[in-house]
Length: 288
Image (cartoon, rainbow, N blue to C red):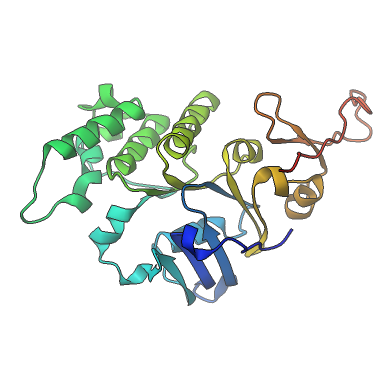
């Protein structure tokens, strides 16, 4: 365990150095170093209140560090103009509010705002980006509906479409499966996997579900009390001891029967009559 910063900066477009993040007098992280490997599917996990969403906000420049620097392509992210940063990095925050009376199509089209300039207004490329984003998130048939009429799950997919319409290489998503039932959670995460695996996007997600995080992440950042408890390939860093230390959960780690990634099986109560002692071997994930 620990803060493995062995990767060179040459393959890290987005990173934070010495980040102290705070809300008024409450310090959330202190002198935190973090890097997001280029082209990775990075997932940040940790208990409630550990600082994972705060870290994501700092990486997306939603909040300014009290100390330290977030670097994007080796330059302080604060040095970019707003539109310039938005052409490089897309963000889906935990909660978003749409203007009253706006349709799905118009909201998704706002994802193209960073690409608009005085001499470059709406183009065929913009239209294609919007249509593609709505098709990828299965909301194109909702294009003429008012966003306020949609269910929570539908709205979440519309917001994701707006971010995808930006066509940025780096996407930061804060709990993108919120409000979604299990089938749609998997649908969204499969979409994110395709963006990473087939299109080479760098993704940074905050997730609560450990087994989903371990299944999809190529790079895992595990946080506890404002520090990084572990980071790296889930196959190498996830252990029962880590889960117990960070989440206070006694468990076994077994291979996911579908894809072989680490899967958390919470320990049964000792007095549970259904307990099958020895039925599951305490298999730790393979390395390499």
